[in-house]
Amino acid sequence: MPLSSSRLESLRPHLLALLNNSYTQKDLEELVRVAHAFAMSLLRSKILAGRLNPGFFGLSLQDLAYDSIGDLFQRNEKGVIVQIVAYFDGISFNKCTDQMLTAHFRRLVFSKVHENLFRAYNTVDPSLGKIIRSLKLCIHSIGHFVELTRFGQPYIAPSHCDILKDRPLADARQLGEWLRRNMRRTDRIPQILSRLSLLLRDQEDHARMVPLVDLAFVIRSLFQEDRWIEAHHSDMESRLHMEDIRQLVHVAGSQIMKQTRPEYVGKKKLSASLFSLYFLGIERRIGAELVDTDGEGKSLFDDLKIEIPDLSRHEYVKKHKNILEYLHRLVYERALELIRKG
Image 1 (cartoon, rainbow, N blue to C red):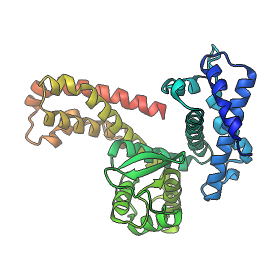
Image 2 (image 1 turned 90 degrees about the horizontal axis):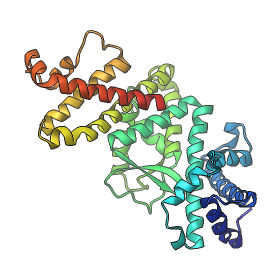
Image 3 (image 1 turned 90 degrees about the vertical axis):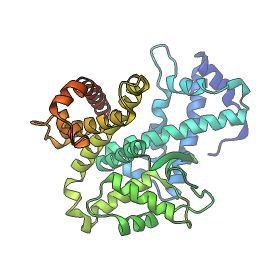
Image 4 (image 1 turned 120 degrees about the vertical axis):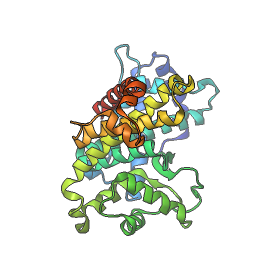
């Protein structure tokens, strides 16, 4: 049932009571009711657009909506509704009109619904969940795309270009045709995203953005087509798992590089170019240790020598060994931390 304007205006006192941790059961029930209505409207729009089938999760639409917002109302030991309080802590509550507060609450609910749909896909269909996770990792680490939200739904768009918002979106069929014509049998997620970035930039008939989940479904369907079975289907999960780890190693390297740059480059202990070469060697070594399982018998010296071919072992020990091993340990520990978080 659509929400009436009077019901929307009544959000302010209920939200204020919740933020002050002085809420009653009535306050909580009203916010749950409104959140559920917002979740239902979002899920219905996805169904009408052909982007969601509630039966995929074995739930009715109403139950899926409740599942999608459930953890938004989790309380800590003091009874604080942590996620809603944290969200509104960053908003000037008293300066917001009732309509603005409603819009903020709707945005929070939409974000939570999408987050939990991702989680549900991963539970019900692990291969699809891995594709979504691998896409997000590549987007964050490679830089061909940026993430954006449109009507509460996550999209990706090529970075640093006009995304042509006024043009119609390419549907899943069109997206599949683009990729089918341009993908190679050996492509992994990073190569697929690189090709998609070029395809979107080179056309002007459609908006240069695609829904993240739609893209995952299209990629999965291409992996499963007969002509892709030999190259992908039998080892799709292992490929995605290895790609996940490679991307997490790169993310860990980027984080430690940013963290330690002031100490080494900022204080002129290392040149910027040598500092970058260190991390290329470190990421290659950790990738070999965690993914390719060929770490035995090789060393950081071997990987740095790939970047600096005339490097002697004596010069390595004298000038590079201590710093390189320290940075390697930091990246390795950060990579394991990211992998454990999944």
